[in-house]
Amino acid sequence: MSPRDGKKDEFYRIWRVISNNFVCALDEGGNEIILRGPGIGFKKQAGDLVPAGKVEKSYTLRDPEKSSRFAELLQGIQEDFVDVSTQIIEAAEKSLGRRLSENVYITLTDHICFAVERMKNNTVYSNQLLWEITNFYPAEYAIGQQALDLIERKLQYRLPKDEAGFIALHIVNAEIDGKMGDMVRITEMIRDITETVQGYYGSIPDEKSLDYGRFITHLKFLGQRILRNRYAKEDDAEFQRMIARRYENDYQCALKIGEQLRKEQGVALPGEEIMFLTVHLHRLALSMGYYEKEE
Image (cartoon, rainbow, N blue to C red; front, side, top):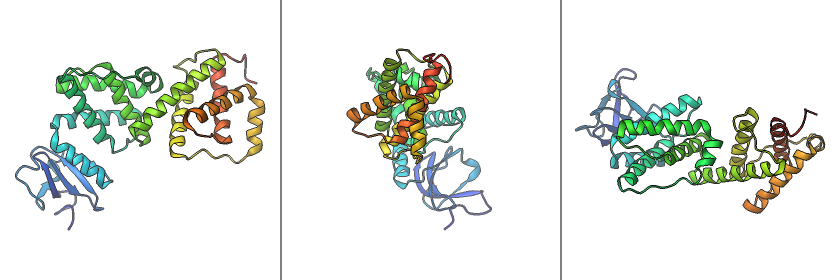
């Protein structure tokens, strides 16, 4: 049975009704999609048709488990929360210029729902990583701040700035398609490494500099590779030795970071990762004025 009947793109055939305004259907590939539109599920049942023109938004979650979780979530919360979450995600994708993991529709919607519930109960969670989030992920934190304004405008609740950090972390996590716990670990790892770098060079980097931004981005993806045990590959051993000789001081800092990761996280960075880390450290040191000029 086709997911749509009649002329192309005119109708969806309902597979399951979630609520008055949400239904499940199937796309052309047989994948489950969730449709949102005013009254599209009212007095409907499986097999009924929904005009495509009445659909305001479609959610394509290719993982059946995630699709089921999202459908279950939709049954238990006010639709305003879904609308707000969707607007935040779409604004984030536009601002960042990239698609986010589909799982963020579940995690962010759920988070906002519970954040508002906690506020109603006068329970506030402090964000222990707020400084790290604002400094390591400034673009995502700006999205989080805008999200607080949207939540206040749409839901009439002004959440604390800590929540802007939590929302930012959900966005960052959706960028790398990981787990929230992993993103927290990566953020803590970045914090520890930047503290080591500041101590080693005896200087605080300009957090607005291009080289600092590149360094933080490198650490973010390094953390992702560590968690997935998939490291960068560079088979040119002579090139690695050349980098170690040319940037010996930065190489020693990279080795120190590698030893730190071995002790704290039980991981052994391969030579390729040490080399790339050395290059980024050298660029960062130059931007901090540690060296008078490029060698």
